[in-house]
Length: 141
Image 1 (spheres, one colour):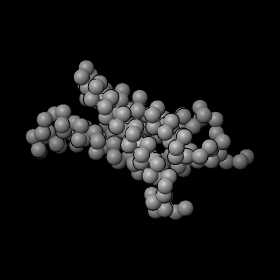
Image 2 (image 1 turned 30 degrees about the vertical axis):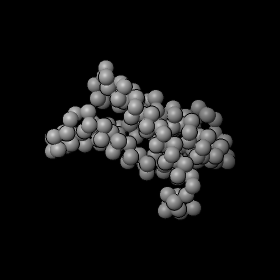
Image 3 (image 1 turned 45 degrees about the vertical axis):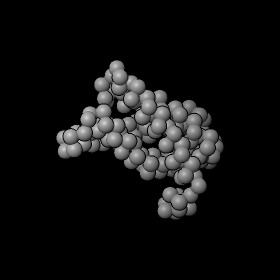
Image 4 (image 1 turned 180 degrees about the horizontal axis):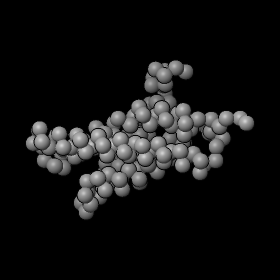
């Protein structure tokens, strides 16, 4: 299947559902952690826990068995998610600052909007990395 076909597939819709569910878990956790943690640490803590949700949903709903050992798959999944975490922190931090400064939104509102926007960028980058690396079928040796 070609790249455009990847994004028009049933698999991608299931991926979006899985990612949306995991993101919702992450946002709720970030709001809860934000009650007693600073913004960036609350993103990190929520991201770590929501990643487990994402792995389980992707593994059982989206991608077929790869023939790899689970610990290899999970390690690759977490590497992709560390990349995604860095992407999320960078985009969230910049957008939150812009929203607070330019639109004079309350801090909680601007941080939440920035966090949601940053998470939405992962829909493309993480799908490609999961499909072609994390959950790619094991090569025969």
